[in-house]
Image (cartoon, rainbow, N blue to C red):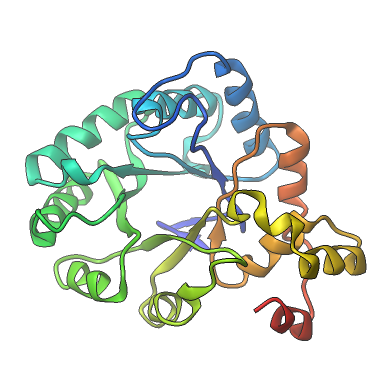
Length: 260
């Protein structure tokens, strides 16, 4: 699948809680997380998802440190602007700050992290258009947007992707959001693809893992790969290896149906 004109790995790497949480940085495991992101890139994962909110921007700094020794043109960086920064000039200021932290000349995919009913989507999308025209951002998208909100945003500028919660315990997007995206050339990026680990104890998933000689995580991710780019987090090299091995097999149709 192509994302913003680049070939994307079937699974990306999420960075939530690497380097801190909700607007709060944590520097205690910086070297570990930089090494994990580097290892993921070396193993073939080239989609790295982050946001200005993660660790109050510190997570973006870690991503910037990790990617500096790689060919930037082969890496797809996704970052997001927080809903309180969706006014035109705030978007511009946010993206400049993200670029500095990422130590990059451009961002591949810039997303509206959550909708904000107090700011007109048109105003935000005009700022996004300006960023693309200036080459600061390759393409833009949204996150946590309903079909109606996507339609509204699309009326002002092209949307590349919608990042949504999508996992085997949250399949509601298959009813409306994902079909709409597929019909309109919008990529789906799946956050919380393992439902914070809950799907790993799902008996259906465990049984299929035994059948295919895989891990429960690989079964869960493989299901999602058909219609999205899942972005699990990894905190150990073996987690990265597990993720990479989730896209080199195919579930039977009857097994896919059994998971729905």
